[in-house]
Structure formats: C-alpha cells, structure tokens
Length: 312
Image (cartoon, rainbow, N blue to C red; front, side):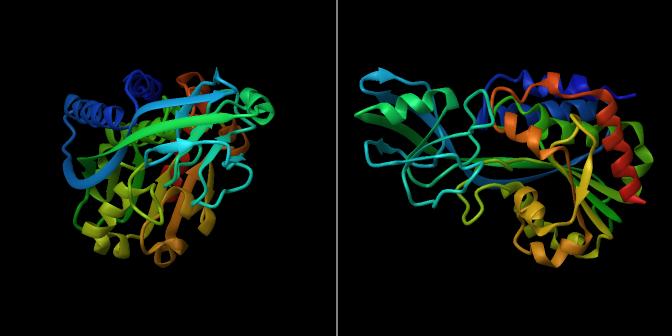
C-alpha cells in the first residue's frame, strides 16, 4: 500500500514556502510517479505570484512578529483596520492588520491587494493599546510557469479528480492530504487511469488573478480542457482531508472556496468537494500548525473509500 502519510511528510519538509515550495513539490511528485512507473503529462501555464521580501511591525516602538498577507508593498500606520477575516470578511480596499482568533499561530487566512499584515491573536491586545502603530511590507510580483500534473485518461474521462500541491505553511491538511489521497489511488489502483483523469494542480493558493486570487491552476486546466469538464460525469475536488471524517458537498459556497473556475455554475450539479471538519481547519488555517501530526491514517483511508464510491 502506498504510504500517504510519508508523502505528506515529504511535502511538509520541503522547507521554503509559496513559490519555492511549489516548485520543489512538483518535482517531488513527478519523481514519485516515475519511481512507480506511472505515466503522466504536464500542463505548463504562466502565472504571477507574490514574493514577500520583508515585513516589519511595531506598536509604540515595540516589535511584533508578523507575516505578509498581501500582493503589494506599502506602509501601515495608525489609520488601518484590525480585523479577523476568518470570522468576518474585510473589504478588499482597506489596509489592515488581521488575525485568526481560532488559531494559536499567525494565520495567513486571507490575502489583499492593499498593504496587509497577519499577526498572532496574542498580540492583538498590544496593538489595540498602542498609541502608535507602524508596519511595512515589501512584495515583489514574480512571473513563473506553474505545472498541472495529469495522470490518466485525457480523451474522455468519466471522472476528473483534483487536488493541489502548493501550500501556505507546511500544508499537511491543505492540501498534502488531497494530493496523498490521489497518489494512493493512482499507484495502488492503476486500472482507474483507464477511465478517469487525476489532476495534481499547481498555483492554487496565490496569484494576481481577480476576482479570485486562488485557484489559478484549476482555471488554467479549465481553459485548456473545458471539453473534458463538460463531458465528465463527475468532478471531484479533494481539499483538506485525513484529520476527520471526510464530507462531500455540492454547495456553491464550497465550490467557490475550493474550485473557483470561471464556469462554476455550469458544473455545480456534478462537482463534489471532499473536505474535513471546518471548525478544526479554522484552528490551523494557513499557519505553521498545518503539520503532518494532524493527519491520521484511518481518516485518509476513509477519504480514499469516499473518492472511490463517488467515482462509481
């Protein structure tokens, strides 16, 4: 049996985040497929991602640890919003300092096209009490070519199954778990490739696309392979499993969050998002807490069975 948890650990141990992590992850996955003699094709597509060069934040001249949460450079001074976007979304045109009240570490739960810094919830009271707050972030947009790794039937797949391999933070749950689930099905059930297409997608997390900065790799697939999506019986998107009982949803809110392609409404009736308990996810969202230790083999196996059942 293919070791899903071992693959998740390898993905989490890549070290660099965002662009560096994505490039290393794609090479790791292709090497794994080659190791097991699995044939695959690559769809290369252009994208642009934010590379955060430096971050600083002080409250009354006292340093506060922060991470970048935006696509642009700029200053954050006393006139800013202090918000918890995971609870209440913030208008995208307001510079802000944000935090996740459910997470014990800095959670980059949302990104903005205005200066934005994410902080730990424990530092919020210091920021609120401060008479003067000043922050700065420097971001460089960087062009590169991302990869979708395609395994299986590229002519007339019955089902198309997606997961993404880029991450913010270690990415064990989001979405090393989905990638591991697909890899196990690919390697342990090779006959599935005859009638189905598995897509290991890049550039899901961050791009300069609007109105959805996430899901760029999925939209690149849609642009080139729209006919496959039109003809497929089902579309499955595995995003955040392995830590709890897997759930399946066809709600538009879940499709928008996990599979924001251009013609979402056209495919809603046949698109299933597979995910885990959202309350737990909020506690690790896009943070250093999204580690391999959260993943449990029995729940991964349940996800495998759920995917196979939906593929019938």
